[in-house]
Image (cartoon, rainbow, N blue to C red; front, side):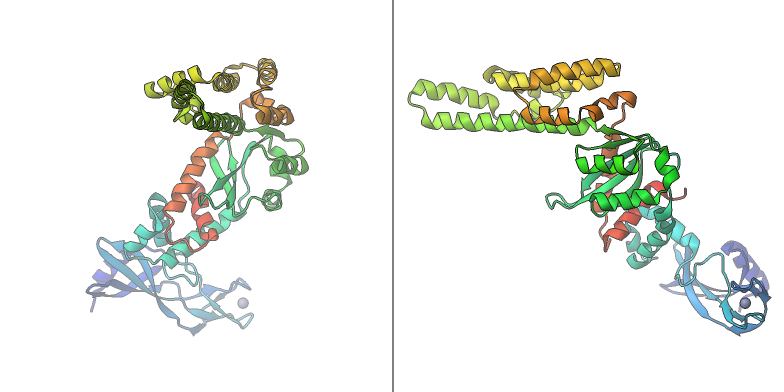
Length: 415
Ligand SMILES: [Zn+2]
């Protein structure tokens, strides 16, 4: 039997509004069970807004709360049903600290989500306080309002994509507030129609506020912007252009390597064989020396670059053009300077970068638009890395929806 004094102390320690502890017991290996009861003798009918004290039935159940030290705490609560004297219907009382039909208090959910965001679901579940299913339910409840959240003050939108499982080709579309470096939404697919649906839900006011949209070089995204955000400027993301140029340079490297290998096989004289073997040695293992930004090369890679430049004139020229292209973006102070630089680059590159050249010509306005505000999807890479990390630690996510909830909470929990 607990004394009045004990119960008063326990009520204070529990610190939940509107209830008091009426008894307590402890079970070895389980924890503390506190029986609590509401202080109020009546409750408000949700339909009529009228108070009723006419008890219809008691409904006792046990929920989990924050642990006390090493001890798990369970609350035995009675969510009473009252009968409304006006509409004559029974109603359940509202309890501020626990959502209806949940097996844990709101504050336990909050703490658990914070732990999941700092760590991952499985390690939080392993502590044994809440189950994986409960955690997923907590994430879902917390993310429910985020799904309806409209972006505030969104001016620069980034549309990008991420392959969550490498090599499987299933891409998720990622919508990002580029100024705030925040994920706005992650979608299970990247079709134009799906993205359009999500963006349209933000409403006309949000759409009208969007000044720039940074996209990769996909015309589906471009036509989407033109269609639903006609005033926004499309910016072709410079890093995606760079990726294309690098790809073409790498194709040339592979091609030359194949040709030389062939020549060695078919060599008629020892001298011819030796010469080509030297060339092959120069080209072999030159991928990163050629593709990485020259300023970021280490000494070994610099040596390799010098070596490949000696044996292949075309790779030398293409590497130089690749570096020049990057410099246009890094060094041009204004739009007009970039325009001249790009024009000059295009005429020089015509022979070597056939594919990139035609892409750049097709996207010329959008590529130049970068120089208005230097908008890029660069920060999306960081966000994508975080998404991949979440995915990897997402052991226990049973579907995409749970994964999306976890992702949204990462950037929007408590806001
Ligand atoms: Zn009523």
